[in-house]
Amino acid sequence: MEKILKHPPKLLSQAQRERYFRDGFIGVDRLVGQNWLSKLQTVTKEFIEQSRHIQGKDKRFDLEPSHSAAEPRIRRLNSPTDFHDTYWAFASQGPFVDVAEDLLGPNVKFHHSKLNFKWSGGGEEVKWHQDIQFWPHTNYEVLTLGVYLDDVTDDMSPMGVIPNSHNGPLYNLYDDNGEWTGALNDSDIDNLDVESAVYLGGPAGSITAHNCRCVHGSAPNRAEKPRPLLLCAYSAAHAIPITNLTAHGKYAEAIVRGQRAKWAEFDSRPVLMPPDWSKTGHKSIFEHQQREQ
Image (cartoon, rainbow, N blue to C red; front, side, top):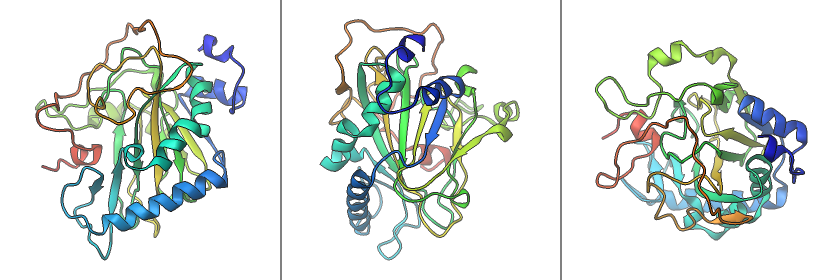
């Protein structure tokens, strides 16, 4: 932390950086300007239209069971940076890279992306969880940045993060039968101060940043509009993935700022390993948490 904070900030204020390291997350209103925002909104609308013609499984879309051409209900656009140059241009050249450098140091890698829609009228909840157990690295200098593509009010169930949970334990995301659920167990939640969670909404262009150890989640969206949140995960160059979950991603582990690390760094704290999805295929967090087959 001290080593990173010694570098002059690129985009965030020094106070925002210090708050990130203290709490494990920050939210910043209107950080992404209208030029980038308009481009992202336009291409996202194109994918919504494409989804109308999709039924069942599709590598691009994770769809709610009730999805239809007349009423599309998208849970997630998987790896949007793989499927459109606009998303990759934003992820590799836009303000996210400056934010990532401010919070990770001068050498930064892109890990993966996703666009969670949290559809209107009951878009599915994301139960309390931590990210790093899904994609373990050799250390915890890994984070996820998000940008809201539309205005997000409290009734749209913005993402909530529990302060200082990045300094707490890593939790078991398997149930008592050894099945991966992608969510904290009830007994662990009972011992967490979930009432302290901070919910990060804001106008279109507002960003979220949370460390990979932070406990976070969101309730179903009961509002009349979807809540599209474009998410990109980045790591310090010296944080090396342990599994090959994103190895086939078009831009996985691409250096977006600075240089490739010559030495990997290891954190002494252990990390929970996910199931071996190499033969069964990886399902989304929604499918795991909702126990979909």
